[in-house]
Length: 285
Ligand SMILES: *[C@@H]1O[C@H](CO)[C@@H](O)[C@H](O)[C@H]1NC(C)=O
Ligand SMILES: *[C@@H]1O[C@H](CO)[C@@H](O)[C@H](O)[C@H]1NC(C)=O
Ligand SMILES: *[C@@H]1O[C@H](CO)[C@@H](O)[C@H](O)[C@H]1NC(C)=O
Ligand SMILES: *[C@@H]1O[C@H](CO)[C@@H](O)[C@H](O)[C@H]1NC(C)=O
Ligand SMILES: *[C@@H]1O[C@H](CO)[C@@H](O)[C@H](O)[C@H]1NC(C)=O
Image 1 (tube, rainbow, N blue to C red):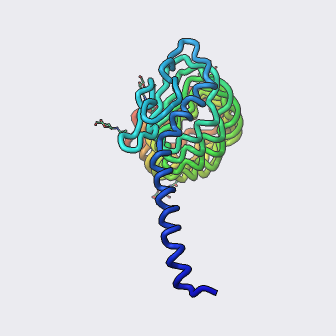
Image 2: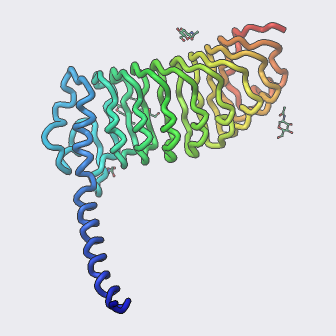
Image 3: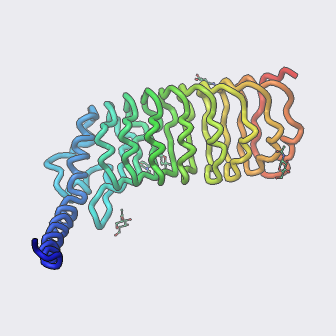
């Protein structure tokens, strides 16, 4: 049986060699795969206008960094931002999007996209901004979005999304803007959403949201924009409303709210409120 010291002296160079090889593979591979990923993503777009004409070839690094709508990290050549807004792409968002591990910003606003938001979007672990607004996206908001711990702006406005607002969105510690307006979302607004100190903008206008307003809504100490216009909210406006002192825009119009407008809503106007749109509401005192 060989002494332990000899065995160790053999294993060190082997480990070092393996490590070096792994580093080389990593260095060569970094970014290189992003080009192939982009070509894969392109396959699920119709791209009738050939807006992505220059997305061609084998996707070798770093050529794809100059493709239209692509912004790369200067050092790693990995895709940092993808802006295909207004390109009339049509088609769907490929699940391959989840392979873009360094992408910080995805803007596909008004790109004629349909189909569902792929679950794999939750694998874009560097994502801070996701704007998929003004498309024809359908299906649910994927729960996997809750994995995006760096996400600051989630803008899914003006689509055909159904189902509930995932309560797990409240697990996004950096979420500042949540705009889900003009969809077909139903169910209640998850109360956990109200316990965020960083959320600044909550746009839920023109959905089919039900239930009542929670007294917890004033726990949103950083929120300035609160738009629930045109839903199916019932019940009364909570008395705590006078404590929502950070709110500057509060729109509760076109719901089924009943009861009296709490007198202390006036405290808001005195404080920071500059637009209160609570009319017409169906008062049933
Ligand atoms: C790359 O460098 C340019 C200037 O050299 C800078 O303007 C740009 O922000 C950098 N981009 C990234 C993604 O780091
Ligand atoms: C994407 O490009 C459009 C127009 O070219 C611009 O208005 C928009 O701000 C860009 N998106 C981002 C996230 O920079
Ligand atoms: C999408 O939303 C982001 C964040 O609000 C914004 O910076 C960007 O300009 C928007 N895209 C377009 C095309 O307006
Ligand atoms: C309310 O939302 C529906 C779609 O859900 C829309 O057709 C209607 O124009 C909206 N009404 C108002 C007053 O915003
Ligand atoms: C409003 O906030 C104050 C101070 O934090 C607290 O004492 C009061 O109970 C709150 N009012 C309501 C109706 O929650």
